[in-house]
Image 1 (cartoon, helix red, strand yellow):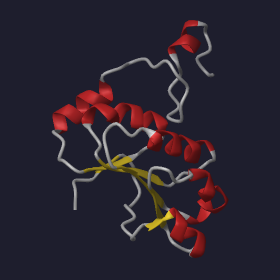
Image 2 (spheres, rainbow, N blue to C red; image 1 turned 120 degrees about the vertical axis):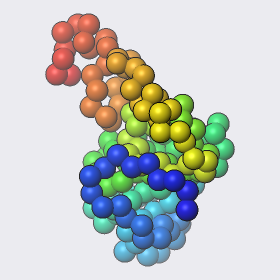
Image 3 (cartoon, rainbow, N blue to C red; image 1 turned 60 degrees about the vertical axis):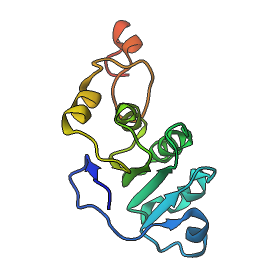
Image 4 (tube, rainbow, N blue to C red; image 1 turned 90 degrees about the horizontal axis):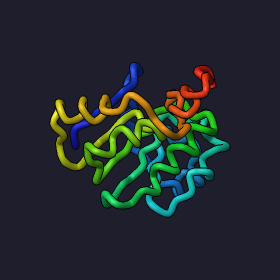
Length: 145
């Protein structure tokens, strides 16, 4: 098993993940794996029954998983969203902003590099699911936006 970086306080769910297509036929599964091309919106009616969603990044340059994570978080999913596959340290901050809270990269990451990547930027420019206030709202006195 690859190294698991996790930013949650609850116990990790390690039940086997089923594909989105399989989940449609067995909606009692607790973990689902989204592959590129799968539509995360198919899971929305079932979010209360899912504890973990794995989003596969088969190659570094495939960014579709970012949208899937954001769709799930904006729909109210509070379970674990785990990025798996070709996940690089320089993607971690953006992934966290989109709603990922666990990472299972194919290749191990240096702990110091992970810390640096997650703490590098004090300010952010876009609204996302992590609750950080965009700098343009801070500049205009909207600290609670």
